[in-house]
Length: 301
Image (tube, rainbow, N blue to C red; front, top):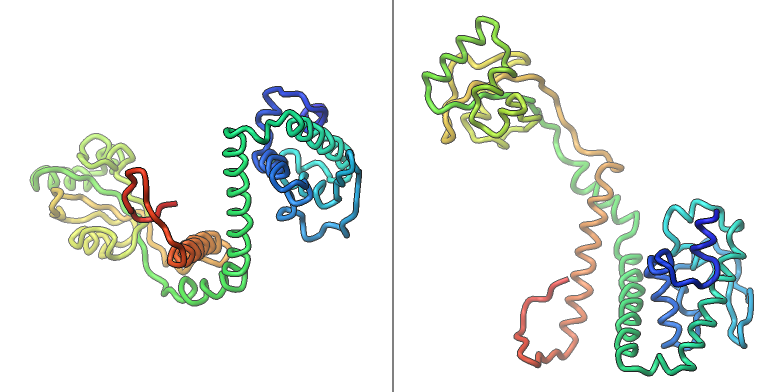
């Protein structure tokens, strides 16, 4: 709790203060531009927040309940583990300090200095970018759309057989045949792989993990899938890499990933597409002229 008091307590420019969540700092700086701190946290107020009301007034400027709950949401995760009601008063005090410091800065004309104006403008753009894109994502990437995408693609993927194999890779057929002879006499496959294999998997006992049909070069894949669990190739398998001695450790049938496993990846892909679509539309409607020796390039994120 003592650490939290440093974080949300009186204004002291120490290392912890400098590490203040960027969203909080951005909100205060944006308030200098917009003239009211009440706008700063509007986008982060939780949907479960109570009806908004005035919590305190500082030199005629209101602090709203939505700002306090918004401030809470911008705290690092370790602080949000503390119940909101338990630290609400400290958050109010912290916001009062921020308003007073911001007002003092304005009285000194700091908000009018070119360097600060440029930085404030950049922060305002960043906040508006975040708010706009959040709105886009909320409309384009819904839970329903994520589940529909899962049902249309991943859930329909057919089951496939996979094998887990080890191999020992050597340069010549004679070397491979000698290894097969040793294995037939009871030699340990993993030990031989570590000692003799020239492939990168040799240090791991030749373990290639599970793989499906078509994931390996055709001769290797065909030989591996022809083996039963625990079986070793009777003759060397030739590929462009050399000669292989293969052992199948396990076999399984792999189905489609369940929704919980796949949803995060699907959501990320949908967000990326929504972002690209939104940016593409804005660019197509804009008049952009490159100056200062900058040539037109493909948009980047």
